[in-house]
Image (cartoon, rainbow, N blue to C red; front, side):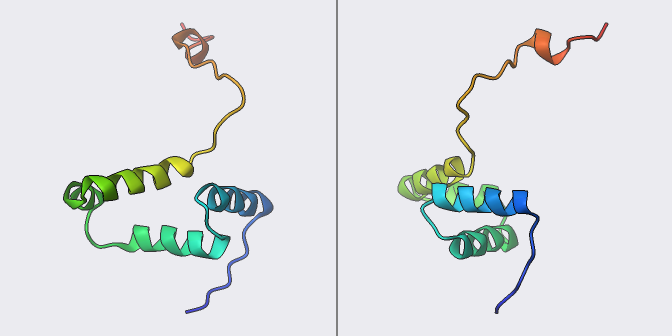
Length: 85
């Protein structure tokens, strides 16, 4: 099936970044993401039934979906609750 979707520029760039991080082209990446979200079996059950090698591969793919930040983020309690009493 062919589907044409128009994404805003910021979503398109995020798709391109994440596909590159996963070592895939955008089409393959989108197919994988959609397929993973349409699986009938709950994610927890699939993860528990996976071999350690399969689990490690899925974990690496999941990690690749999250961008690495160049800068430190202040996630201290003080910064989160600043201005609250």
